[in-house]
Image (tube, rainbow, N blue to C red; front, side, top):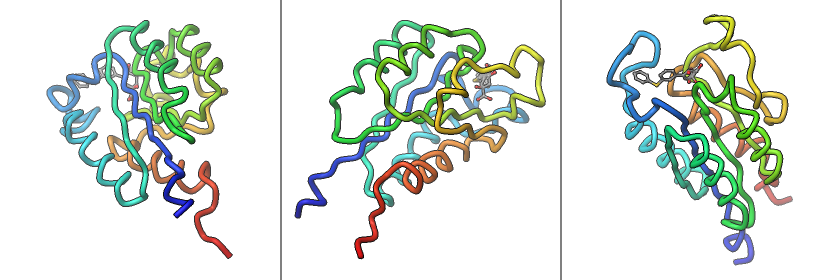
Length: 158
Ligand SMILES: O=C(O)[C@]1(O)C=C(c2cccc(Sc3ccccc3)c2)[C@@H](O)[C@H](O)C1
């Protein structure tokens, strides 16, 4: 029916070093690999009737190209993004997000506000819908569920 035509796409974007997730510092970043995170996100998206596309890069420009590319991929898209260290450095990624005008939920595995001072500022947070930080890799699933509740037209028809 008409509702089924409404495709909502979750774009999961991970930044530098996150390809190595789960291989070191489990006390900080947990023991799940990025592949485990993607599997969990796919399961959550399937449960919520969302499409999922995933991307990870250690290169700022490639992340920017991916942000540009999400335009026109679906009738409705939102970004779940862990920019990694680019969170604290990249005006260019901020500008790319502003340019595409797609809602973003910023995710951090660690609570960046409990870490070094240079991690306390984000170039993304004030243009994001919201931020999930400090809940480990569950933060990704939480962000998808929050997006489904807060960003998508209400699915309960009266
Ligand atoms: O907490 C995060 O998710 C964060 O975005 C992730 C970061 C980060 C930093 C180094 C490595 C990794 S990923 C990783 C984890 C364990 C072993 C190897 C790589 C993420 C930080 O740069 C950020 O300040 C915070």
